[in-house]
Image 1 (cartoon, each protein chain N blue to C red):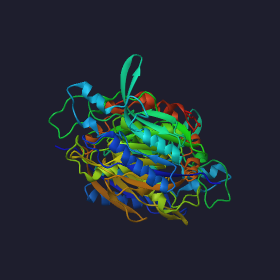
Image 2 (image 1 turned 180 degrees about the vertical axis):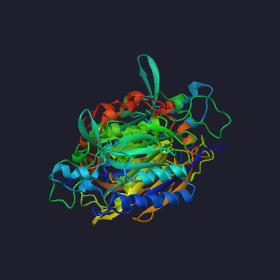
Image 3 (image 1 turned 90 degrees about the vertical axis):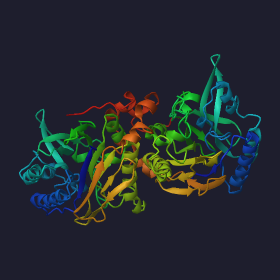
Image 4 (image 1 turned 60 degrees about the vertical axis):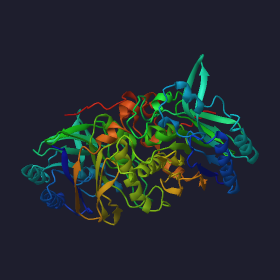
Length: 316
Length: 316
């Protein structure tokens, strides 16, 4: 019997500062029910899915930021989501701000988890590619303080088996999707599918001259190249729309291992898109063009893991 | 004054077995004149530009294959091209099959060179990602014997400065373009532009079920992702059309650092496309989203240079 997985991407519309976690979880529950009604066994929620995208705000008092973080997961507010998913036999991906006590010290990560259809935690990921800055920039339209509020993830890029067919699933978060290194590491570990959530502003605050139409194009280009170049399914879910006036783009998508977009959101509201993924589809790509064992030449890739930034390094 | 470079991609239509090198060079000379008339200072010719794509043919006698290789470059047949380019002050990229004597032994590479507007050799590249196979497969419609006829390139991925503005230009060949590693290494060395030639069959002989429309899509997707993810210009030039009945796809393209295709061929014949590349366009990308020094995390990329093939490696 063919190995297939029915997946849904459950995009969230905006979450304003005034919105409670309970109200957000209620929306997620509605979407989980919708996904279930379509026969989905796996639902991908966004990055930082429980609150507004708070890294846009500067806080003088660091304690004020703590309110956006979860000290445990499931939390009291998300417990109903976990319970419903388990009762339906649905697994999911969920992004949230994680506060953890390790070595007697508080640590803060931009985190996602995979939860199995039995309700148990399968695996955790902490975002590696934190965009933005850590300095106060009061004169820009909004800030992007991920480098201030989060530590760089310390768990690496991993792949877990899930569901009855032991589907090999990797996870990452938002900006990670722009970096081919992210997907290549998971591809080398045997990923068949990579899932991610994102919060991405509709304009480029670092480059105000950049036409906004490039934003979703760059998002899709990154997903499609990652899918094709590793022969994997990619599911990406937005938090979208105007959060207290700050605009995040949609474009939630399910991308086949051929690089083709097979399902795509059309709104910037709560929206479920679904697809019945044939896990065999990527095999021919991984066995031919991207047969890594036959064609990769790591002796020529050393710089990728040895050098961080650009060094002008000319052969003449 | 802004740094700009007017480039042309000079796509070749088919070269049949019966076509002489002299006849091909004549066609290239016509295209170089056309590029010059448009004010181009840099012309990108295809991979293995002087002969038919011979790796599709099996030869029992290895000596028979030698006829496709060049023992020196410029060769007597290509000398007129080099001379015309120098007289016009035009630099170029040219792909050819290279036979070299090193250590008392003959070596064979799929090679490209950059030639400066003064006619001097700037730099040489030998193809790293050789596609295909080295075994005889008489029962397929055509073979792809690059792994038989060529050694893996031993010069790595490099970047050279060219033209009056010291434009930092890297080069690669055909299948290299599908591998993000190729462009990342050159990006880390400071490339502003990467140029390449290719010969790519219009169907996928390894996966006959693959719809042919995916072939040019995968080609373009790879170029566009490479351009965006490194903030570089990419110029890619096909040998296209039916060579003795074996069909190669076109799609020669000039891609901006935004990932946008700014010029694209529409034929599978000899065809020149041109664009005036603003070298500053990639700077904002390399300084923001893809500021490697700020955002890359090589400690999590080690597998890329340590592991060649997929090893199923699960975290649960």
